[in-house]
Amino acid sequence: MTAPETPETPEASDAPAAPAVHLLTGGGSGIGAAVATRLLERGDELWLLARDAGRAKELRERFPGARTVVGDLAEPDRLSWALGHQTLPDRLDSLQHIAGVVDLGEIGELTPKVWHATLAANLVAPAELTRLLLPQLRSARGHVLFVNSGAGLRANAQWGAYAASKHGLKALADALRWEESGNGIRVTSVYPGRTATPMQAKVHRQEGKEYDAARFIAPESVATTLLTALDLPRGTEITDLSVRPGG
Image (cartoon, rainbow, N blue to C red; front, side):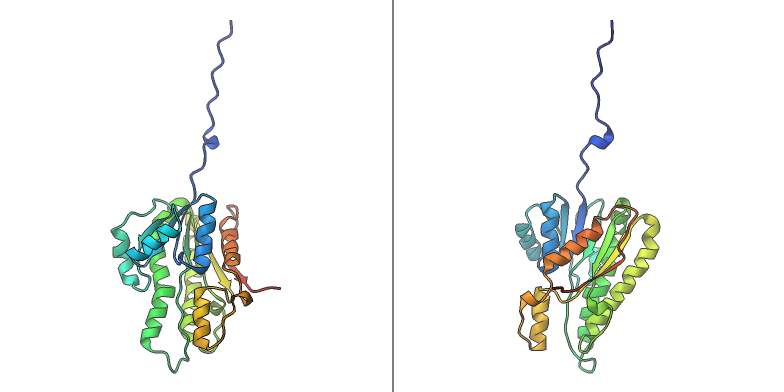
């Protein structure tokens, strides 16, 4: 007489994988909103940084299922205190620095106030936010993505403060890549050309030019670029990637 067969138990690999976890800045508009939409559509867990509680409520209403963290990139010295009083994800598959500010002006006209505001939001805050979330990134062998700019590779007239902040952001990314490669963290800088975002509309107002969104890169195209870098198999890494308008 043969013993009854024992039902097979599923292998651990058969269990559904936990959704990837991402934290974004700049999720309220432009490139950030396009990335947030795509990540939610594919079932990932999304956390969005908001500058205040009111903005956090708006983001949760716009992106059902997303969670929010409140912290003002304009005040990087306060980010540690702010995040220390809130629930954060236990692990992060990606931290995506997408938010940024711009104010044009010639070097002879730019005041310290403009320099401080630009460097705080575009460089110091990403550095601080990365520092604070490194434990979660290391836990997941995660990915840090920086939306830089063509201005991070070259500086034109009236773009001095913004370009300086973006050149610094490239240096931050390059140093981070070397420092964290042993922890399995990947680091990517993406350098979009002019993109059809609210920031671009502001730039055109400052330049005194008419704004035509159809002339520029669609935010969704830059979002595709970011997700392409993010989704590369382990063992591969896009370090720097420029995106330009094409015919």
